[in-house]
Amino acid sequence: MLDKIKGCDRLVTPADLRTFFETKRDSCSAVAAWSESTYKKVASNTLLVLVNAGLLQPTSPKGNYQIRAVPIPSALRQQLLADGLGYYLSLMLDV
Image (cartoon, rainbow, N blue to C red; front, top):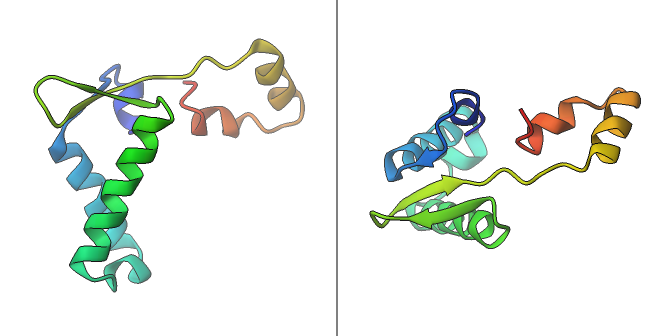
């Protein structure tokens, strides 16, 4: 998802979501060992959490989502940078 933001592409499609979760399945043996129903439930719940947190917003056509970056207060940004923790900004989608 961070790659999409860096490329100024804020649209997430079902294919993007499948690719993301398949990559996790391929890179982690614990995830690869999950049953298909567990895998689908985790993927669905992860998507639900991102939507409920306001980081993804459903759009038309159904199944597509818009990435919504949450503004980082300048005081927090400055403190993270001062503490040498600037890498957290990328986790907060502040690119």
